[in-house]
Image (cartoon, rainbow, N blue to C red; front, side):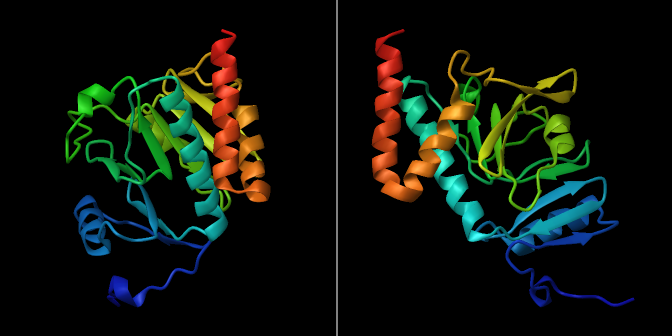
Length: 216
């Protein structure tokens, strides 16, 4: 048997490494060795571990979409907590995942101030987001962990899924924000940010939200 150290593995940006027959203790040990401050993302399901390093364009989309959603929540005065690519895991389910971004909304007060989360005791995020430039989303893992809503950035669109009876069903609007056409509007401001810059796009987006609120 050949034994390799993690430091010997080099995963290029946009590529993924699959490791088979990884036990839960091995998964925990790998997470510890990788550390928290890294560019790679992991996904674990029943012994299969995926390590992926995102492309710069992936990170660009993740940041601007996350910023737009934060601005939206601020304008609506909705308390929220974002935990970025926090590792969410449940040993009993043999599942683990690191979203590109995640939001606690209805359950924000339940985890407010907590430094460590345990999904056997704490609720999962209300909304998780993935940017699928390299087709990395693992909906079955998010479903097993009980994440109510999943957003996928696919090409230039946003697709929204609601957890129903243990499976994700694609829906036209976010169940968290009924009446708001976010899946069509947010991509417009993502594209504007590429032309006019982030700050200009953010100001335009906030004006759009405020205008809709004033006519509600």
